[in-house]
Length: 517
Image 1 (cartoon, one colour):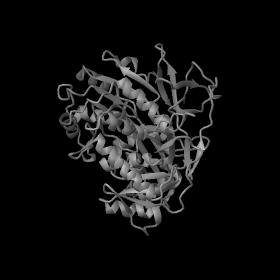
Image 2: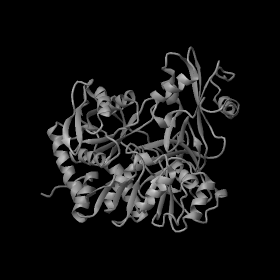
Image 3: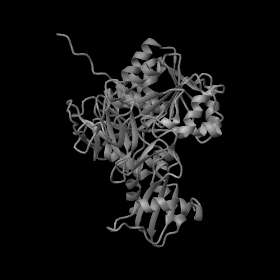
Image 4: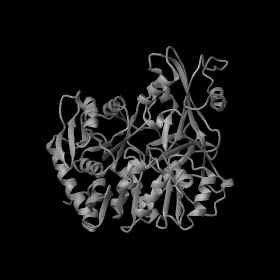
């Protein structure tokens, strides 16, 4: 009797690439290169070491390693062992990392042997600092976690965990299946026409969903994955030079980076003649800057990709070089095999303005909270039998049949490619003993120039001390641009915080009192 075909797996992409392109470069970083054969061999060795260390199929394993060849090895090794890979934010405060570990039910942590300070912080999260990492090889170590969660047995094909904001102010684990990621990667590689001759520039953190294309799209196509050194990210001219010298042909980044490359980096098609795919996601691309890009890169293809972490990319728009900014930039249509609808408050499909709902093979399995899976159960009408994710984004159909964004249902905003819930910021700041109340608001002095402003009423705390405390408690991308200590917060007639009044007052306060005092 024949066996059913094996379920698709992300680590299988690497095995296939090693078979088909053994001597081609697989990953490059910091002057080092591994071929596909070398990458596959090392991943196999590390996967064996993980199994020997006690890692079981369905276990969640955190990767707390700087973005590097070692981090790539760690992710693939976890997948190869049958476990679930959970990249962790190296810049997050230790307490936040500990929350991620607990919420996702992480059983083991992979650490970098080259960074003892980080290792100490991770040890505190893992086991109270009582054990040393066990060597795995390739400059990696492994730590067990106290009170680990049971392996996932009810999540078919679970393979990956990414973290997003939670309503309590702490991150939630988004559990993705191998197929969730594979469907997106297959579509993207085909749409972009990626081949073994391409060099994919990877600038995104491995904790960010943009990185899944870089990591797995390169293996699927046999292209070379080239990691941008983190130290260069703050220097646009150096990023442009890196793109040029590394001969990058495919680049996927947030609009903020592209803007800085344009204004401070001197990015042009003549400067970067090999760059043929310019893809962006994570936040709106200001119209004037995007139009300038299309003029400067006349032979490149531009793609506006849309989708939250829970669905990865679900719609796309190829931006025509004749695009008129006055028409607005749509998020386009659904990618192949994915259903995207606008729904009303009863979750019924509508042709009027509505909330964007997504169902299909890219939609996540559910949230991990307290180490347990909370499956996705929402359905939309007409029901196609698969759960749908309500994005919180509002949209409408244009005359061309494409979807155009109209804002958010809630208080989530997009900044520098990250989705941030303003209530998350408030929840964390509200825990400070000196803070009586606070409000975080979003202001947009000009299109595409959004800022987060925090107002706080506090006792015995200076603005400088408050900023230090906020910076220590929140990851960098969530730290407000401006912080103001006030005697009281503006209230509505019903006694609620008047967020609209605070947001409208913010630009005046910035002019009167300066920024980041």
